[in-house]
Image (cartoon, rainbow over all chains, first blue to last red; front, side, top):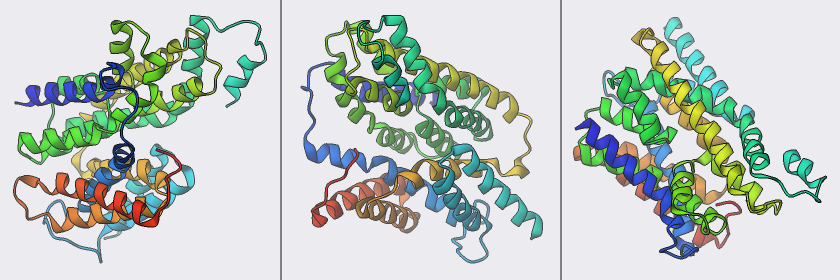
Length: 104
Length: 247
């Protein structure tokens, strides 16, 4: 199952990169489609971030107060906005999480 | 872009294929600061998510897209049905159609082999540096070698950093909560690019729907939240009557 999934998603992904190079669809996408595609990364990635941060991976409870992952995520957002680097953002977020867990 | 200016100083001589290739490699180099750690993190996450070493490593060349690979691993670990996993990964990667359309006019005259190869190498990071080369007007008939250079460096560094992550990941204890690196990686990607009101609206509605939709069957919340975010962003943009500066 996993191999067919890997290959199917891989073929689709290659298709998204190659499709406009085929020349079949002309060179221009409709304007509304270009605009909608522009929102894809933000919408998809936020939809993954929010539950991973707000829902406890073990108890499955939704929590905002007393949630070390939320504080770690907020610190990470601040670091991402200032440094614009993936590695410093991950480092700051993980370090915050470790410190909070160690204090708890 | 200082790299492009260097070539502008010698206008008499058109860049050769090798010039373009190495220019692409040089232009891609600064992005390695983001790509290599991300590849390492993916290698670690793949192992932590229960993929085998071989699966984790091959995913980096079969999918060759960081965010989608992380989503693949995360949903696989969560035991999500295949259809949801597949459609989630596909939705994330649909943005490449934009890049494909954007470079099409520069590559359309090439042979099928070239277009297949450059299509495969058309990632966020390679597109970002090579489209600047194409649109800056320094391009000669070998301009596609620039994308070959940027894409090749990205490919090689992505594969090697994934392998390194897999090797390291097998020795890291669970108590380090390294899977939390997934949302952190995504925060690093989207926080700096979120600028307009429409983008913020897209994020807020996608995040809200992702929480509200948790009880829905088959983990369908992800696809629903993503589509809801896209539609909201698009609508806010049109209600505002403003145009996005960058696509």
